[in-house]
Every structure is written in structure tokens, then in C-alpha cells.
Image 1: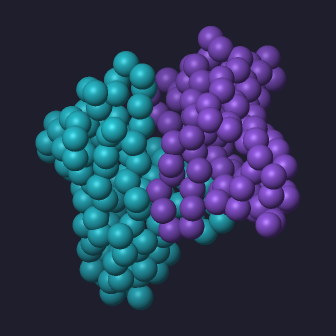
Image 2 (image 1 turned 30 degrees about the vertical axis):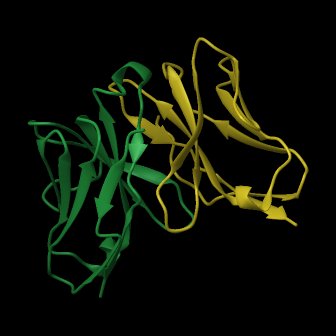
Length: 111
Length: 118
């Protein structure tokens, strides 16, 4: 089945620490995955993406890991800053080009 | 980069009236547009997919007569919430894929529309 939205889990970290946000996706045929950041009252903002033929991709301060065996994605944010506080969603591109969102995690960064 | 403009950002309407939300791709041709709905503290739920010049494909449970989607051009899609009721109050977000991005499966999101039905 497709991912269904649930109440958001929360992650609280200290400024400067690394954050790891996890996501389980639903469709083994999904071939492309994206992490988004969403601030209150705004649309999702692209962070980083990864194709299914890769297991790791790095950006600026962010790394995405993909484990297809267990259908798991993670987003690692290095040296987390207060401006990183937001809700983070993983999304999977399923058959037909639809982008389906995971449940999301609310990241709170303490100064 | 690709930019999608969504308008209005906020709208308040009376029960029974209809509201139109516009989603425009500003610098690329949007061959496919997606409409999402988001409740507070929840994830984005896909409502429908529209391809330019074709009828929209609605997700299970989404009333097509309630949520009218038009994608008549490569730069504009509209979502009309007809005969709105308070339970239609939500955050509506559009996303577009286009020729510019097709090779990289790009999805560009609008800034969302907060609809409040009173």
C-alpha cells in the first residue's frame, strides 16, 4: 500500500550536534527518493535526492542513505543549526510518476 | 531553477461558495501537476495528478466533483473547491514536473494555500 500520513514524531537535538531522521517507504518498486524540509505555512523545500541504484549521496551538511533491503531512508544533518528546525519529509516516486510522502519528522534544534 | 507560484496564499470563504486556487510554473513547461492536501501536523496527501490537456486522475477517496482540476496550459493548473464546507479547510499545495526537469524527475512545489471555510 501507499504511505499514509500519521501524527508527526519529533526529534530534539542540541545546536551543533548531528541529526538523523529516518523514514520507511512502502513501495519496493520506487526508483527515486527525495527529502524535503517544510517550515510552518510554507510548501516543501527540496533538500537532497537519491536514485534507487545508489545507497548514499552527500550534499552540503546533509547525507541521504538508502537501504532497499529494508525499504529505509535516512537523512543525516551535520552540525545542526537553529535554522534547520522544521518538519522533514521523505517522498518516494512510485509508478506513474506520483510522489508519495512519508509521515514526516519534526526537528527541533535547541540553541 | 524551476519556480512554481501558487495563489492565493490564504483565502477565507463562506460555506457553500467555491474557491479557485492557481498554480503557475514561471520558468518551465509543467507537463504534469500534482495537488496535495495537508492537515495540521500531518503529511501531504496526494489528491490528484493532472497532465496538460487531459482529465485529472484522482486518488482513491477524493471527490472529483468536489475538487475540480483544470490543466489547460503548460504553465497553469487550477484547483476549484466547489460548495466548500468547513471540513474542506486545509492547506493545499501544488507541485509541478516539467520538460526542463523530466530527465531528473524534478518536482517543484508551490508555497501552498491556506483555505479556511467559515
